[in-house]
Length: 162
Image (cartoon, rainbow, N blue to C red; front, side, top):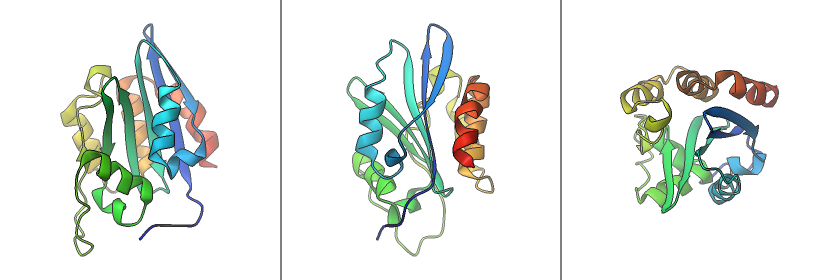
């Protein structure tokens, strides 16, 4: 069911506090373990917004945003749950069944409005998710650009992409 070899990609923690954005790399293990991603983000205690942007294996992305009552999630491609544990874990937390293996359509699952309070309106995020010809890191960069932290994102993400 799942990819067992090492997973590539990037994982960036994003914090907005006192009107300033700060990005930092997350441990690469979060690309395979959603619980680790949530725990690491919760450890970044902040009075402002905290969320993680995960580009998993250049196949799909996940936005993870801890909330007081749980976690908000967005998975860019529900079909990734058939091959990747972290995507399957996202669907489990969302209480959504994985798609049929024969379904070739790509669609997101989760809260497409989870970043609306930080500059990414739901309709725009829906458009970015729908740009399936782009790589996940390009989609995440578009999110960073729209929200206003692209320079900070690039400083963290570019070294991870090499």
